[in-house]
Length: 58
Image (cartoon, rainbow, N blue to C red; front, side, top):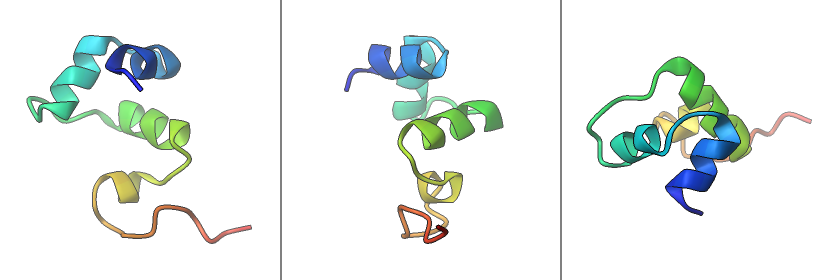
């Protein structure tokens, strides 16, 4: 996946994704939620608050 394709999928710019990857900026809550939704995971997983990638909920 490219930065551009992820940016298009979640509605932000490629520059935003690049800065997040390079740790030049911290994503705001809206972007974090969109990334988590896109990858079908939780924000906690993205923030290393859990090792559980997928929810156990039905």
